[in-house]
Length: 92
Image 1: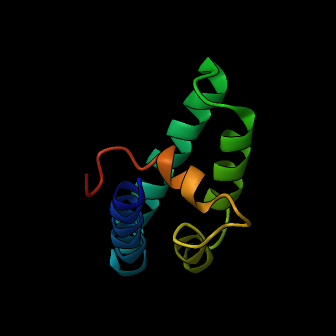
Image 2: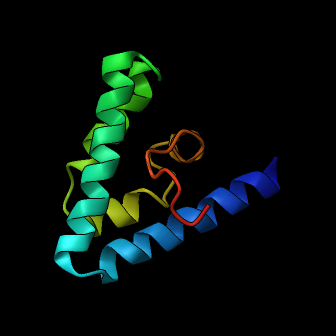
């Protein structure tokens, strides 16, 4: 299990780096795709409200803070959020 979480953390570090280095239009496209995924979770009840609300709040942050938070402990939710992530297909 620790290895799986390490892989998820590495993947989210790569996504965070993308968010910090991509051109603004590409960065916004990626963030909007993640927001759309979270909204679909909400609409179709595909994920618990805890994940939906926490990811929605993260995706509303300024990009530097979003990048930092998605690879952090996130108030004890980091591992769980990375397990149920809206960053579909990125660095998979």
